[in-house]
Amino acid sequence: SEIFTPAHEENVRFIYEAWQCVERDLRSQMGSERGLIEEYVEKMPNPSLKAFKPVDLGDLKRRNTQDAKKS
Image 1 (cartoon, helix red, strand yellow):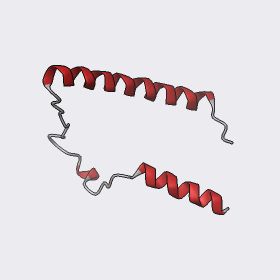
Image 2: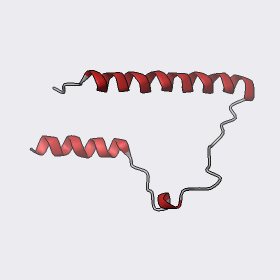
Image 3: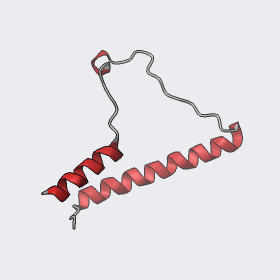
Image 4: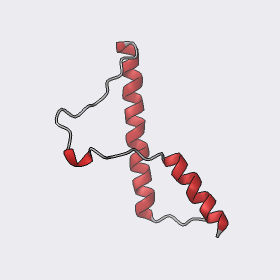
């Protein structure tokens, strides 16, 4: 069983509420703009992020769960 600190719970609550706002905005846009989705692209990308590779959080969680079971 995991123990979460009040700060952790506050962060989770903040992210959840912010995401609910994003979803609400997307739903309202879909009604008015027929599903037009806009992708943000940097006009001047940061050169230090050129080698950045996205992390598959689901895969990372699965590997961490498997590692925990092995110990």
